[in-house]
Amino acid sequence: MSHPFAATAKTDPAGRRRWLNWLGAALIVGTYVYLIATQPAEVAGGFGNPAGLVTLLGFLGGAVLLLVATLPALPTSTVVLLPVALALNVVVGQIVGTVGLPLYLDSIGTVLVAVLAGPAAGAATGALSNIVWALFNPTVLPFAAGAALIGFLAGWAARLGVFRRFYLAPIVGAVVGVFSGTIAAPIATFVFGGTSGIGTGAIVSAFRAMGDTLLAATTKQGLLSDPLDKAIVFAIVVFLVYALPPRIRTRFDFVRRYRVLAGRRSEETARPAKTGATQG
Amino acid sequence: MIAGGRADAGGLNPLTLLTGAVVVVALTLLVDAWQFSAAVLAAVLVPALVLSGRHRRILAAAAAILLPTLLSIALINVFFYPEGREVLLAAGPVRITAEGTWFAVAMAFRLCVFVLAFLIFSFTVRAEHLTAALVARRWNPKAVYVLSAALRLAPDIASRAGDISAAQQARGLVIRGGAVSRGRALLMLLVPLVVGLLSDVDERARALEARGLGLPGPRTSLTEAPDSPAQRRFRRSALLLLLLFAVLWIGWRWLR
Image (cartoon, rainbow over all chains, first blue to last red; front, side):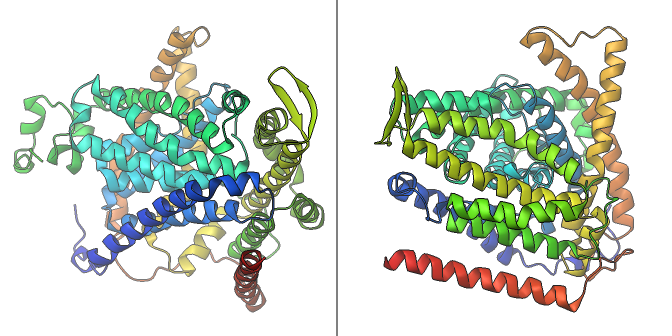
C-alpha cells in the first residue's frame, strides 16, 4: 500500500533517530536519578528550589524527544491508529476518573496500539496521549514519560509472546505497573505535592502518618495502585484483541511478524505471502 | 473549547498563547513561593480569564480538575507532615504542623497557576489555527495529523460510546451493581467500540496514503493562523528572557 513516491521518504536517517531515542531515554532516567539523589533537601528544604521545573522539563522533554525519534518513522497504517487510541485513552480515562476508585484505566489505547503495532508505536501513543489529554486536563502533562514507558514495555511484552496466553497478560501488566508507578512518584511529589485523587491521597496520607518521606509515600502508593491498574488494562486489552475480527488483527505487520497472538493456523495461512517471518 | 473551536483569540497566534502559558508556569515553578504564585494568579491569570470571554467554562473545567487534587494535597500535607517541627494540633496519628500547612498552601497556589494557565490556552485557541501554526512551523505532518485527528475524534468517540451503551442497555444490560457487573458493562461497551474504530482505521489509512501523508517536504495549510511580527518578537524575547532568568536564578541559589 505504499505510495509511488514513498521511496524518497527515507530522508530521515535512522542513526539520528536512534540517537534521539537514547537521548530521550537518558533524559528521563537522568531526571529520575537526580530527583531520587537530591530528594531529602528538596522537599524538606521548602521553597525557592527548581525541583518542580526540573521534573517537568526532564520528563516532558524526554517524552518529546522520544516522539520526535519514533513518530516520523511509523508507517501510515500505524499513524492512523494513534488518534483513535489517544481518544480512547482520554474518553475511558475520563469516565473512570469520575468514579472515585484509585484506578486510572487510561492506558487501554496505548497498550492496544503497542500490541498491534509494536514498542515504538506504543511509546509514541503513550507520550502523545498525555500531551493531547493535557488540553482538557493539564495535570496529566508531566506524566507523559511514564505513559511512553508503558507503551514501550507493552510492545516488548507483545513481541516476546506474552499476549499468546490469557493468564500471562495481567501478570506482565502488573510488572509494567511497578515501573510506571515508580516513575510517576517523583512527579506527584515535586510538581503537585501529592496526588490528583482523593482515593490515592488517602493511601499517601497513611504512609506519611507512618513517617515516610513524601517521595517514599507516593512511590509506595504508586506501587499499590499501578500494578493493579496495569494488570486490569492488560487483561482488558487481551480480551479486546481476541474479540477483534481476524481480518482486522492479521492486518498488522507487527502481529504477523512476531506471532503476537495465539493464531489459528487458518488465519496465518490466509496471507501466505507474509507468513515467512512468523518466528521473531 | 479547543475541540469545538468557536472562540476567537483576538488575532493571537496559538503559539503566542502557548508561549504565554509556558512562561507563566515555568516562572511559577522556578520561583516556587506562594506569594509569587498568588500574585501571578491575581495579576495575570484573572485578567486573562476575563479577556478570554469564556471564564465560565474555563472555571467549571478548572474546578472539576482542581477540587479533588487540592483536597488530596490538603489531606496529605496539612494533617500528615512528619518533617514539621511546629505542631499546631495533634490528635492520634494526625499532626497539623505549620510547615505542612504552608507547604500545602504553596503547592495549591502553584497548581492553580499550572492548571488555569494551560486551560486558558486550550479554551481560547482554535483547533484549526493550532494545526495551521504547527504546519507553518514545519512540524512533521504525521504529528500534526495525529494531534488534530485526536482532537476531532474525542467527542465523536464519546458520543459513539454513549450510543453503544444505550443500545446495550436497551437489550437488557445492567450497569449498576458490584465491581463484576460494572466490569462486564465496561467490556460490553469497549468491544464494539474498539472493533468499530479499528475497522474505520484501514479506510482512513488508504485515503491518507493516497494523499501523500508519508511524503517528505513542506505542507501548505488551508487555513492560516493569525500572526504578526510583534507576536513573533514577543515569543522570541519571552523565551529568551525566561532562559536568562532561569540561569540567573539557579546560579544565585547555587552561590548562596
